[in-house]
Length: 145
Image (cartoon, rainbow, N blue to C red; front, side, top):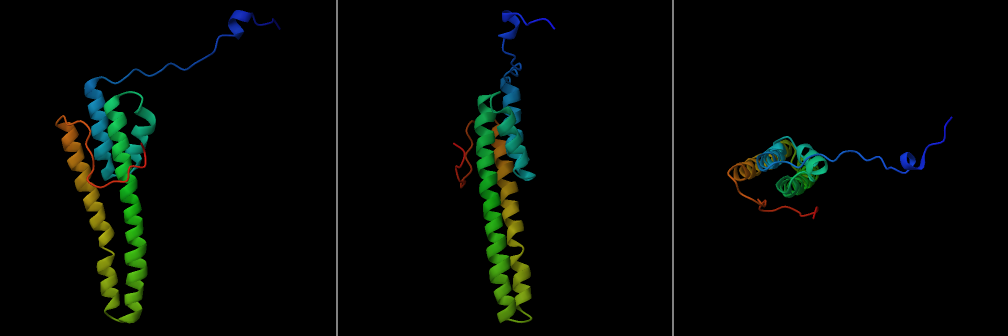
């Protein structure tokens, strides 16, 4: 077996870097990051992890959308556990017959939170689609800096 020559053995192999997005593609990816929130956090996560180096707008907007999705998921989980589990269960024990009705009504609260998520995701998508830069959700934990 021939020995590798020093010139071929010392050349590092690197993957080609993807081309940066153009302005319109950058805006479209940012739009998808926000509108994808209707489906949950996965579209924002994919865009943030996979495409953040390809354009400044998709980097900022996918980060903002992902921060909102994390906030929404935490709120939905907390409401689900607190309202439906603890309060609803307690009322079902304390008020037989009526408590189950209250628990059923409380189980609608997570769906209302989902509607808030849909509404804010659509508003963000519309704003980005109209050319706004740097949309901020009205209340979101800024976990990703």
